[in-house]
Image (cartoon, rainbow, N blue to C red; front, side, top):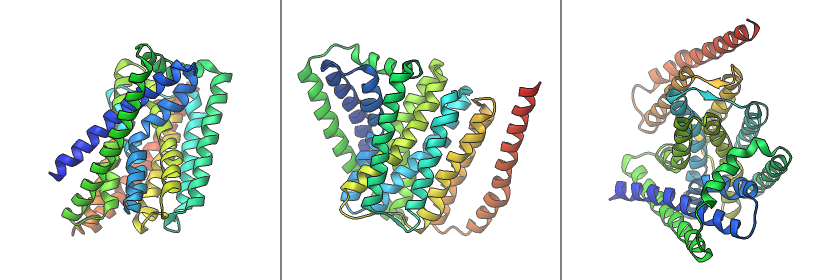
Length: 356
């Protein structure tokens, strides 16, 4: 029953987020709100709605570490699995704006979170800083969109597709209410079942949050990015992941920290391992995106390998497996140097092609 509850919670989160986005976007459209504004607010917030619902519920339920674990795990999953899987399907195109602006911003907010959680928690005033960063980021996107509308055609196109269905206002309002209800119920079931599963397997809630819960709440991004890749909209797939990672830190942790009755917890392993891993994979994007402005199938295979190693390590630590020292040595002295060599080779090869 616990696993059924977990799956049901994930399904409700996905459907709830979709209903909320569609209902809110159409309601905004009936009031004359421009498609660009809807894309930068309603649709952008909607992709982080599952993470937000779960983190807020976890914070209120007293699982304060699960709240941060969900956001951190989602960011790691977004890059290593979603981008990895998408680029294995078809090499991804990296836009100039992503390289110059969005990826540095993702790295920057990841550094801010890493610094804030060094002391083991995220206090309300720190969450307020993240939330103010969200307001500033949204305002900047809106200003940029008005100034260079062509750069955000994809966001407007997605909104136009939603608005193309003409529905009455009462039906859109019903969609919003139903979407919120599904998000609340889905978050409750997911958090409750995740805690029970953690207890059953003798692992802490953070491990479940970093893996099962994080992967589940990232399902909307999985669908969006993979479908965009298959359709040939390969720049949208990357932009969706990078934007979602920024929102997860600024929006999910900012709002969760503000409404939580107690500071959000980041245990020793979270602060010293998981958040640095999140920062590390964000930094890894910079050279790989820069090299040829594409993410190749080999890059995708590397990302997927890193995620397998990360989850394997988490499980081995949680269950105190006897092979843990061997696994640690393999990651530190094998996989780590391999990543460095691969990045250096990729940059050298890109530089050689640019001069030929």
